[in-house]
Image (tube, rainbow, N blue to C red; front, top):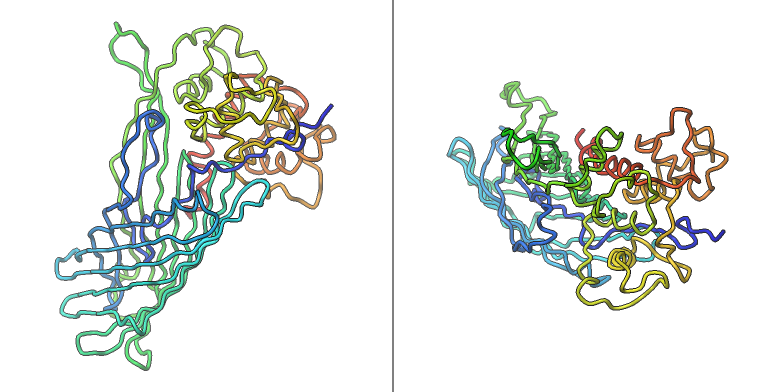
Length: 496
């Protein structure tokens, strides 16, 4: 039998271009903002205007005076990197403007940072793309007032380095940026105060949650002789995520029993610790934490109908959630829970789960890549969108769109969609499942990674049953498990 398994007609997952890692919602100076939230389900159908320039609530702790001072205000950001979707190399502009006042009302912070960011897209990778960036500082104006002292940035004596990488895997965009800068200020008497900062930004972005973490090690010295050194560690975290819950209706005489709701949560936290000894600081000044928590946004999901035949079935909740989230769209019918899910239906569900745009192939069909997926096929827009975004690629004439997908094929796709297959690389080629010998060699790395992550599990006898086809019930369960993982569990290491 022809290898279909992500190698023959390869189900190679890649990131849709509408899911790009977007960092910088907090700026790059160790403050926090409310940041942007995640897209709502309704945005699939209704275009909601967005501005390239965004203004957010902003907080920062400033250490220039030797005493931690909290500032509250706004940050205005313009860092539109959409050109990276259409050109493999080039540049774009970034600007960050902060206007803030100290909480005691006696201080002010004014800052503008501007960069030209040069980038190169590496699109010759099998399962992901990468974007390498290097930012060149083009403008930096800053003035800070704390009490009676005013600190003005000496642009000539200051420098800033920002270089990053975005790893665009099938469903999650990961990013890491290294930042280092020296800011030389002059106080009102012309005395120098030098701030050095070294650290990194890292995080991820995908439809169900996103996190950006910034870590900074800051040193402050006064005078030409670098006297009065202060050492501070600062960490900031912005997290946005979706949670789903069932809301039962109160009236007895109502046409529906309840709805699934999606809660959009967004919170940013800043913690700092003064590492050096300063007798003038109290314990509450040596350690601090500030937060910005936005009001939760609630989204009502569609009410699934005609699912009464699932009552009591072990996958009932999984089906209802996926129908409410419009990840499953097949007309419900009794017995479907026992049917096999086809390769085409599985890809369609993943496209919907990961919010991949299919509009290009619903309005003006252009081409046929697979002989068994003509423009009249109901899965055509999903298969073509997946192919267009490198979610899948074929090396044969057909996609085998209607053939049932087996467990090892589905699990390989399952792990590659989150880009963590490298976790399955071990010295031993064996997985812990008792039927390991029946797992194809091309699937072992991904299955091992899924096992380590806790998202691939064996049955009660420890079997993964790799050659067995997946039922729609099993597909509902594993896709819902994937979404749950992407909602929260994936961010565990980023919150520490």
